[in-house]
Image 1: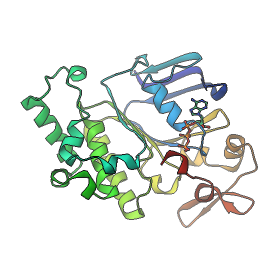
Image 2 (image 1 turned 90 degrees about the vertical axis):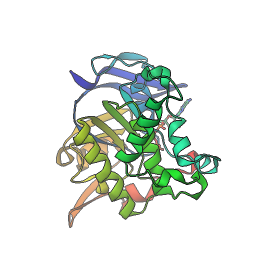
Image 3 (image 1 turned 180 degrees about the vertical axis):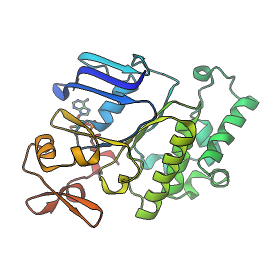
Length: 266
Ligand SMILES: Nc1ncnc2c1ncn2[C@@H]1O[C@H](COP(=O)(O)OP(=O)(O)OP(=O)(O)O)[C@@H](O)[C@H]1O
């Protein structure tokens, strides 16, 4: 059984086609880096896997069944919103607020809820952090609480939407190593969206790059190339490998750094 399978999937939003006639397969236990320029459809693809956006055409299967809303086998970390920081909650209650007893067949306010939240907080090393109010928790620490939320119910597929955003390189490394360790220990599949390939090098198994309605899935060597990215960006792209890092360039500019802006989301 595959973790995710798209068979000639087309997804549109409003009048726009976001993904056009995409076929691909992600195996169980893979760690996939999901990349692409702003607006390429990374979030839309994750929402389609969650059953929140229905493909216009084609078939989208998750763990052998058609994608459906409220699938308890999926854990989701949405893109971080500043609003979270303003919530007047403790970290523990924030994580617990995502607990859906009905979905996981456990009664709310039970010992089971308490144990599940504590387990998830231990899994991300945030039991101490969770004692504090959200307002007193740093961005990196908040990201760990969001990851704990996504782990509630022990999902088999983890969808993480830009968990590295606004973290410094040290905290980025920490989040990536944490997710990699959890993925291996829990033997789960991870789709990890990011706007830069470099932090993911050496951690991901394969990369799924979206752009211009199309997708390329494969090894970093096969996908992060001038010809493939020129097709996905719709313009001439040069890929330079230097000192173990990869630079995606157009007209002498580093695309992944220069063009990725998230102001619209915050
Ligand atoms: N309801 C909608 N109607 C029409 N277009 C939409 C709608 N919602 C989102 N879009 C557009 O769909 C495209 C895909 O958005 P999506 O958020 O999936 O991209 P993304 O790759 O995650 O981008 P980013 O890197 O900026 O987060 C964007 O151009 C967005 O503006």
